[in-house]
Image 1 (cartoon, helix red, strand yellow):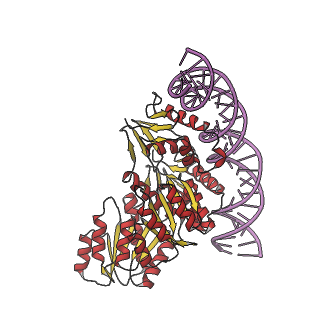
Image 2: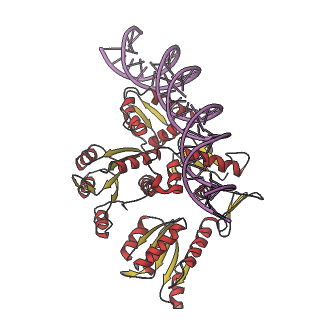
Image 3: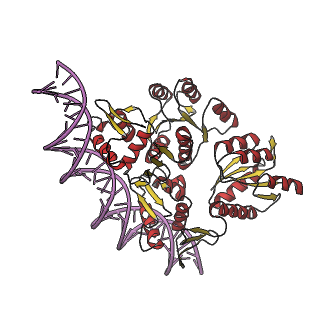
Length: 225
Length: 225
DNA sequence: CAACATCTTTAAAATAACTTTAGAATTGCT
DNA sequence: AGCAATTCTAAAGTTATTTTAAAGATGTTG
């Protein structure tokens, strides 16, 4: 979950980034209009948190730029010190997904972020995969069919990473980096991934590799069918 | 996908190379300004990952050299410890395709590499060849007509290399270099290429060399019609 | 067209990648 | 601190892939 925080007030920018990163997202920041504009032109973020009153330009223009972009599925959460209804409506008319008035609680922002990510990926509510595997990202509860299965944190993270990248081959390096950060990089040994994959497979179904296919020499792939 | 990594910090250079190679690219490294300059004069890389602060010269000059080069379609990703916006803008003005600030996650670099390669080759998404052969580079799935064919990693890499160089004769030396890197141990003997080509032909169609033509004495050529 | 080089094809050997198990080390919790 | 759960390490067993090797086929050149 890649998030861009376009906010010129440094301390707020930092606290948002830290908070959301603790929640498992990857954040980048933009401190003025130009940096924000440049960054969204370069990369498709999942969410942009956008302060309307940027130093060197209006956040509204960033919003327009985002919505003009083809193919991107970026959601926008507007934050603004201005509480006027007009502003709110203009933002939402232009396609913003949510609106928060300063000051706000980070927990509040976070729950909106989560809601958007849910909606973005799975059409809201609990995550549904394959009619059979359900992942409730709020409660971290996973069910296969009617049965709830109990996963450890690593297994849960791994499953979520697979599910959000289904039908895509994920190398062990990418998996390692996503689950362990890059302090474990250069370790030329990803054996523990074998173990976690094996455990996850066993817990998911009796038929082992039904969902998690091995791409020999390349990695693993979570398949929908 | 041939990538040059111009980075003087040895451990970073190595981890980038290892990571990107696992992702199916072929990497070469340059540890100082002169080596980088020499290598780009010699070969048209698909991407150059360029540290701006090279030991014996400025990366900016490498960038200029690259952009002066006629006919080359090399993309540049700048990595720099310097986070100033000015630097970024100078790099982008000079034609860099992306900019990363140290430290960064290798997964992040990889996703930018992938984005560039997609853009460079096909304008994103799945690759389509010949109306009949489709290659999904995310899922590593290859279909001929309606049928999915299962390829090993080497076969897949070989096919992708052929497809991205269609209608061009590829010598066994070049093929070997792109699929195995500059491992000089293998350079004597290209027999295994015969085997891989043969296997790939068999899997692609019943009519053998329909797509992969032999250029006797020169190499192979993947033809569109 | 004969001699040679290059390529095709097959099968088996060698290697590398993955699976699985069990136990050690670490972490988290009361 | 002591116990339980989790995560990581190590190693043996299994399977897929890559490479080697060698015999047969085809193209090239004088």
